[in-house]
Length: 333
Length: 263
Image 1 (cartoon, rainbow over the protein chains, first blue to last red):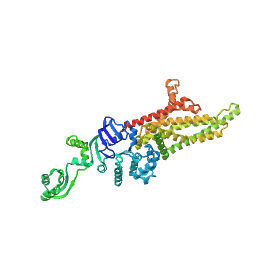
Image 2 (spheres, rainbow over the protein chains, first blue to last red):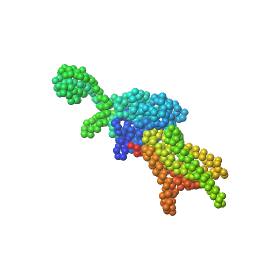
Image 3 (tube, helix red, strand yellow):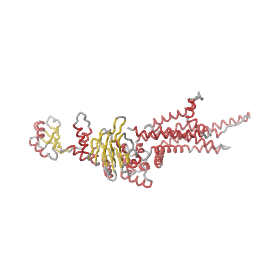
C-alpha cells in the first residue's frame, strides 16, 4: 500500500531523512519510533504530500506522492502533531467543513461526519465550541478529522499525546479496530504504544532507519537469551565473592553488577544462555553460600533497551553500531 | 471548483463566528456613515451660501450637492479601505499557518489555486457585505435630491470602491501568506498600501519625468479618482484586474514555496 524507496529530504545541507526505504502492506499498522527530531514527522509530511522529497520516491496506493499528489491526498487521512483545528467552530461544523475540503460527496457527508464522531468518541461534544474542549477532546476531534473521509491510509503523528491513560487505551483500541480495512502509520516516542498496537516497527534515528521488524522479533533478536535481575546482600560484605559465584554458575554468560554499598548489598543483571531458566539454580547457589537474597526476577529486554541501544550514538565504539546493522539486516528478510 | 467552494464556505463560516468581521464591518460602516453625514452638511451649507451670493450679486449658482457629496463620499471610502483591508486580510494565511490548519488545507485534495481562490472570494464577499449597507445612504441621497443626480456617478463610484477593495484584498492576502504573525502581516500590508497610495505624491514636484509617469500609473488612488469622478476608463479596469491577478498569483507562489521551505 505504501512503498518508500531511498527517500531523502535535505533542509539546506542537513539531511532530515536520509535514504530511507520501507513498505507497508494493506491493512497493516506500522509504528514509527524515534527520538524527537529523528525525521518521523518529515517522513509523514512527505507521504501526505505536504512536503516534497529531495530525492527518492514514495508511493501511496500506487500513486507517486509528488506526481499524483491530489490522488494521494484523496486517500490519506492525516493527523499532524498539533491537531489542525479551528477553535471558533463547533465540533460537528468543523468536521462538516473538513468533509467538504476532503470532497466527501454531499449525500454521504452527514453519515460520514456522524461515523467519525462516533469512532473518535466525540459525539456528545458535537455542539461544543472547539476552543472550550479539553486537550484530550481536541486531540480526538483531530483524530475524527483524519477519519471523516474514510481514507484508505491513515497517518497519525503522535496520536496519543495529551490524552489521559484511559483515553490512550481507547485510542489504541480504535487504531487497532481500524487496521485491516485501513493501512495505518503512526509515530510515537512512547514505546509500549508500539508493542501494543503495531504489527511492525520502524526505528528511525537521525534520518536513518535503525531497524525494521515486529516488536516481538526486535526484543528477541537483541536479547538473545534470558536475563535475570537479582538483589543480594553478600555474606560478610564480600560483594566480589558473591559476584564471582554468580559468574561461575553453569549457563551464565555474564554478570553486570552495580557497585555494592557498605553492607555488601548490590543489584546485578545476569545474562543466561538462551532457553535456560536459571532462577532456581541462582537462588540455590546464593543462599547456599550464606548470602542473603532480596530479589530475584526474570527480566526480558524491553523495547526501551533496544530503543536506547539503537538510538544512542556512541561513535567511539563500533560494537553497538554493528549490532544495529545485524538487526536491520534481520528485519529485511 | 468544488474545492474552491469548500474553502469559500469554510472561510465564510469562520468570518461569522469570529469577532473580527463584525468589528471591522461595524467600524467601516460607522466611519462611512459619519463622513457621509459630515460631507452632506458641509456641502449643503456651502450651496446655501452660494445661493445667497448669487441672489445678492447675480453670479451664477452652480453647486451640485448630491454629486459633490457622492464624490467626497467615495473618495473617503477609498481612504478608509486603506485602513480596514489590512485588518480583514491579516489573518487569512498567517493565522492558518500559526494554527497548523494550513497543513490541513495543503494535505486535502485541493490545488493551490482552489485554496487561493476560495479564500479570496470569501474575503471579497465579506467586503461586498460590508459595502452593501452604504447603499441606504445613496438611496436617501437620491430620494432627497431634485433633480435626481445621474446614476452613473453612483455606479462608477461603487465599481471603483469595489475594484480598489478587491485589489487591496488580493495584495493583503499575499502579504498575509508570507508570515505566521498577524501583526506583522497587518503592519506590512498597511505600509505597502500607504506606499501605493502616496506613490504619485512623491513625484509631484517633477510631473513631466518618466519616473513620474510610471509612479502615477502605479498609484492605486489615481486610478480610483477617475471612477469617483464618474468616468469608466478601460485603462483603470485593466489596472485593477492586473493588480488582483498579480496578488493572487503571488499568493499561489507563496503557498507553493511553503512546501519547499518548511522546516
